[in-house]
Image (cartoon, rainbow, N blue to C red; front, side):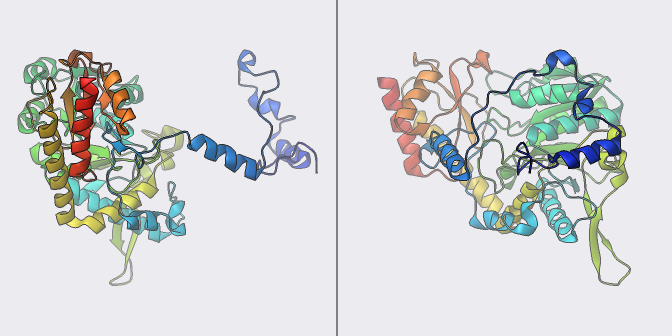
Length: 462
């Protein structure tokens, strides 16, 4: 065996490479990279560490991971897009089963059991968001929102997308990047006291060039947007679509966006049975009504159920597969080669386990806990527990502007108390000053919240 053949890298045996090159008509492997400009090719040896044995590699990885401090060791009040919720053991048990563990994307020739599992997930989520059609998961909420905006552009034939300024900045960047160059984005202001959308600004920017408005409810800044019907009416007058990003776990206590006029609903599945794990537990969803115009603009896969030729027997399969980039390849409307189907199955397990009453119960618990947290924080001198006047769900902005301390200083003090504090908003939303976005969910106990309030008081009195 030649010395340079690596056991984990396929097709490195020179004789095998030679045969493969001969088939495609190339003389050398370098010929395959001839399209890459010579000036950007690395022409020197790569200075990489020596190869490790399996045992050495394990020790190296464990040492690196042990540098991290997790939410199991500290009390965590940090959310802002990835939230700590209770994960029933059955979610992990089922998504680790071998028949699902490799549910990377799914292909037409694969098993119908996986199709059924994804169909069940789609059906359960459709019931939660009160829409008819749900796709298999996208990468995350950001991609789902961006794809929803592109769908709206194709449906309306218009090029402008309005974004609520309270949308998560990272998602705004994804929407603008993913929509470029076809779509142009413009922000709509929010009221600094309530957080609600500035309807006068919306009216000024809304015209017949606008394909859609994208807003989030509950918003990234925590407040609940209560003007849904008014916003929808304004959009309908200009024949523009309404896209609403939603935290699905809020729908046990909040009205689904379709009830106040949303045409497309999207969001992240992470609250529904997925652990926080360095961006690996995110998965986006898109939902619409059963409208052929909308269905034909989904770039991703949809699974349906149909009767077979045998009476009483049903099968599961793709719906309108020919509209996808799997069928059209480079001529598809959007390329969706990678998905996170395993998280869809996990979310389906979570929803099936919780049921309607369970989702309602967890929503009520979250709201009660977050209300209690604000009440306790409000007792601290110079601190306002909730900056906005509007109701909130599980996240809320704490105003520290009158304390004389920065969020960075406060969070450092909380870390010394083994608490992960709120997301520092002073850079993302400088108009809000020294404020932080705190997150309280069903996992927090009264003792956790009391400890946060006491620790904050101690940090501010130093």
